[in-house]
Length: 432
Ligand SMILES: [Zn+2]
Image 1: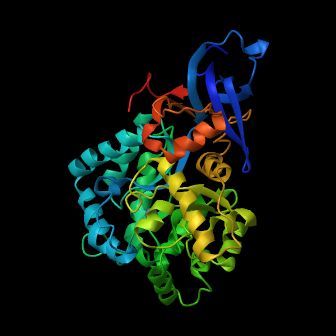
Image 2: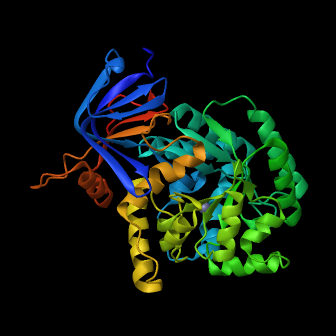
Image 3: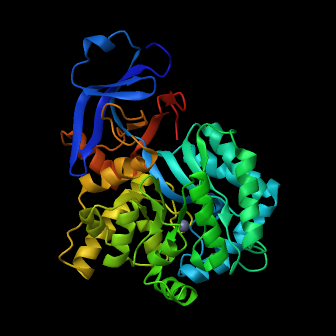
């Protein structure tokens, strides 16, 4: 019980006990043994008294956050082209940029910016899109492995509609490249796992989609993709897969919607109706809700409260570069604001999300995709972020609950001091 992933942290602790309840401790104790959380306490239990204790004083300690949807190769052009909608933005900005990752020198440099910044934000787990390129995706995985973060990374599949420079020759070539990538990384990484990544149905022929569904089954590999983000995209999928009853059903027809044991992540679901909601639930799929991205590309507002009430798995995604920042606090804030506008402008029978719900989605909701992750209950992986909010001056006596809410609304003044992933400290008193 004395290795360096066994210790006690002391500070202002906050975590979700359920989607409607945040538990807090002022100057409480948080115990980690062999990378696993043993719980939070007001008084330190006798049996943990010999563990090293790190006292963070008045600082806040919250669970690490999970970014369920982020595109690594888009990071360096975030914040550009935001007057476009999805399909124009992909063709004008995204595809030409991703084509550059054919060049490993370019990829290495660009990915170093991505991984450096991902290390220094509130995220401890992420599910990441690469590009379709073999070498560049290996480079991305190598760099992420070195960070200590725990991630899934996908080599993207595209055999149509990517233009001359961002497209694999055909389904066979795309599937062979995927198998080659999987063979190359076998046994190579501890914290960086592969995930099958058909970009979306317009980018992948029927044959390729079926092949990926088969590969997922054969190798027990998870899948990530996009679903019902934009109305033109939804109409296009209906043309491409006319036998489907809806976009989600098209994925079902290709056997790529996964199972509760091997869940698929679908980003967006802005225009998903009851039928799609039922399909997502039936398969145990996770929705990556990307409110910042959905605002920027004028896609719409996903009815997240309805999905929560229906019991669908949900986490948050930054969706850089359609989302403009990897800061999960900013993503939480936009999620809250978007749900308030959905209630006011779209459907007053759907109540706005509460802060409790959004804090849960950013931590335990997305964390569930990785197993026992995203809260400080006993038995969960010890992922934690230590935050200094002392620059947010106030005349009030603030509770821990109030401090984490205002931190979300004033993210620029929340300074990360330390970060732990499965009990491993990533930096020594990092300064961002
Ligand atoms: Zn995306």
